[in-house]
Amino acid sequence: MRVYSSFKDIVKLVDKTDSIGLVPTMGSLHDGHLSIIKKALIKDDMVIVSIYVNPKQFNDPVDLKKYPRNLEDDLDKLKIFNKIIVYAPNDRDVYNGKEEVKRYNFGKITEIMEGRLRPGHFDGVATIVEKLLYMFKPNNAYFGEKDFQQLLLIKELARKIKLDVNIIGCETIRERDGLAMSSRNKFLNKSERKSASQIIKLLERAKKTYNTSSPKSIKSDILKHANSIDNLKIEYFEIIDVSEFFKDKKEIRAFIACKIGNTRLIDNIRI
Ligand code: PAF
Image (cartoon, rainbow, N blue to C red; front, side):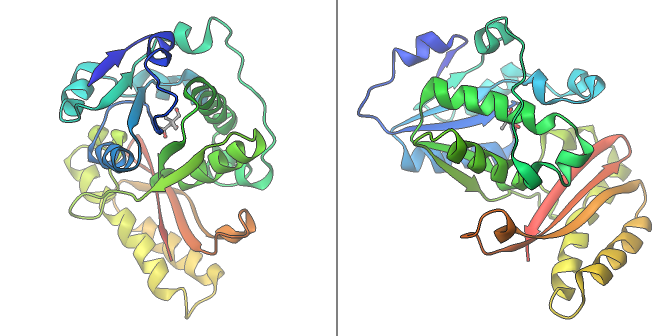
């Protein structure tokens, strides 16, 4: 593993014949990230893992401040991969002192769920991802399906800016009890952690009843059940036909966002 804080130093290492894989992260790495890196290492000769907490995608300054950061721990976890290059920049290396967030128009994908509740969030995500794609010009870029709406938006971004890159979705990695791995899980206390294990149960309940109930009645059943879970406050539950956004992607997904105590968690599954 080689670690760099300057983009220019990495670009010098890129051999034109290599297939390059990019794994963008905000650090606080867990097994979900490690499984994405393993997938990239199978496909690509050179894998660049970026670790950067992008301030532009936080619509809440308190959330940005408390977002977990520990580069030393992250590098320790990445030591098992001797072939990767880590890009761990500061704000100046990424934004070069120009702090503009780009304004995009991705239509409905960014108007529902996370887009509705976190104004500006997806513009911030697209700004940093576009930058990283232009910087490293990867053949493949990898993103977790836990942030499925983000994955759709990034696919649309790559199509719009006509970059020759495959955007590859990677399956959500879960704890033994089904909780989706997330950097935010470490904020949960014992009783909140127990409540968080119910999130996947709500999604699975929706999946079970999908063929026999209407989306409306599934939604009201899920909201009712969610209400009975300690510490859990639901922000949205939605069943979405993904082909509305990508015609060739025929799948239905159930999405959930909730607060467990002060910690906001999201998850989704294919139905
Ligand atoms: O999913 C994330 O961790 C971030 O949104 C990303 C894609 C690294 C952009 O900052």
